[in-house]
Amino acid sequence: MKISKDQIVKLSPPWNTYHNKVLALFGRDPEVTVRDLQSRDDYNFGYFILVNSNAKAQAIKTLLKNPVDIGNVTVTAYIYGPDENLAEEKANADGLWAVEAAFEGNPVFEKAVAAGSSFFDSCFCVFKKEVIQFWNDDLTDLYGNCSTLAQDIAKEILNDNGVDYCTNIE
Image (cartoon, rainbow, N blue to C red; front, side, top):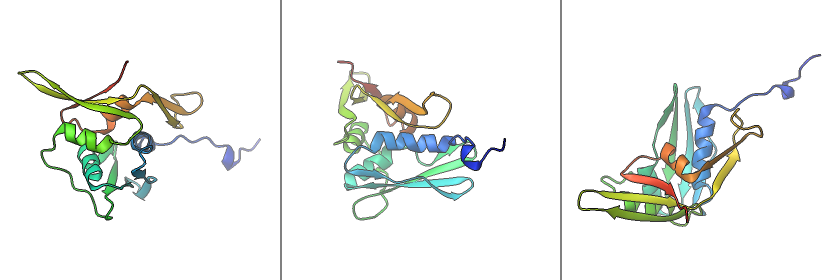
């Protein structure tokens, strides 16, 4: 019996999983468009994030780890604002500002909260209580899905910036 090319099973590389996580976290926001991952060469991949607001583009640029090295492969996000210009990272950005600006209008986001005491200040990004599921053809799920929480994706793909990510348990 000869196996045809369409019967050969291939798994997606980890940089596709990373891109799927970015898409899962920001893709439902009506002001954000995450484009497909494109190969620039064997070791460099990139994708565009198009944002309808300069403040939101700047906040996403500030929060998103970029570029990301996965093994010997580099994945770079190019974040553009409404004027089709590359967004600049905001220097010394307040974590609360960055979270509110980046996630305002995103259906997975609930609120940003500043909490503190006389000794320290903390910023919390609170996501809604829901499971995010997307197609991810690896071996972690029988049906090829990735099922996770927004907080787990955020902890993996976003910079710390003094922000803790959590899910509302009410």
